[in-house]
Image (spheres, rainbow, N blue to C red):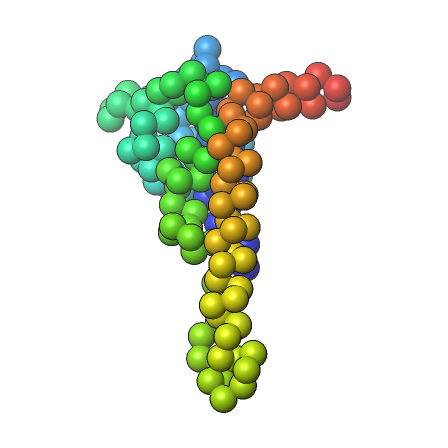
Length: 144
């Protein structure tokens, strides 16, 4: 099982809004870049707006970032699109055999490992910004 694609699409949306900031970035325009349905984009844009990452106005086409791109971390996006609940990135199987020493103890053992791993990943996401993503996109585009 992998992290929901909402995370990567959320990053895509924000990056495209910033990349196209001199143009009008509609959900249809974004959907053509993501290669998905505009309704999916509108749902995610609603989540990004609720998190205070973008500004959109009903009836007026287009969106813009609500903060500077250097102030938007990937962790902000991760939280905004509800990728996972608190400390639940990894699932632990249930109903292990209580008569087995491993079955009796494995859940408590791996739960702490999984929480540690999730917190480490989230720490990395907090250190990366939309500015970093933009710079990489521009660098890759210029190298083509």
